Amino acid sequence: MNRFHRWYCGTGHWRRHLTGSILPRVLAEADLGDRVLELGPGRGASTTWLRATTASLTSLELDPELAAALQARFTGADDVEIINGSATAVPFDDRVFSGVVCTTMLHHVPTAAEQDRLFAEARRVLSAGGVFCGSDSLSTPVFRLAHRGDVMNVVDPEALPDRLVAAGFSDIEVGRGSDFFTFRATA
Image (cartoon, rainbow, N blue to C red; front, top):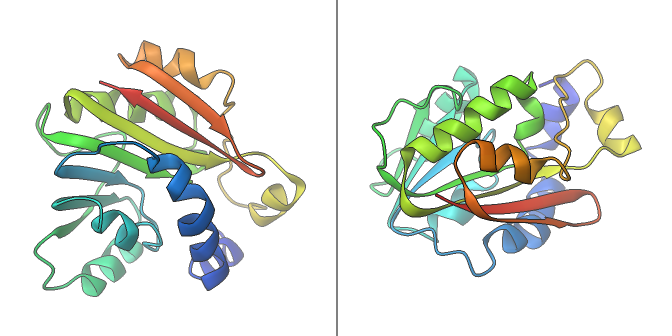
């Protein structure tokens, strides 16, 4: 992430938008079960919120500095595990999670092929009937400006259902907010 983007994702403004607008829509009526995997928590604005929804939360963060900061923040927490690793090569066995969540991180995955690999990995680690849900940003002028010099591979919400079907998901729902979209699918 560029400097501005890294800073902004740690602000109260972003945290309020994520926890007040985005996450309630992502998780509305979703039963994530008791073992949830969070992909790409970044600075952890969603991690605390997700922690309250499940008995066990594992967060997988690619950036080693962000992962280390989250590990320090959740030191001593028995219900949260932070791991440095890639969402395109999830370091867990098949069918071990009841829910997988990724919020506003898909646009940081450099290519569509890698995004599809992330979808396939989410499907692989979900138990039968498990829920994969999340959100990402829509391409707006402010969004594009904030990502100047940064990875910005925006997901087309209209094409997302077909991509999730190709990864093995069913019961796919995609919704739109003012500057984001949400999705939910079943393994």
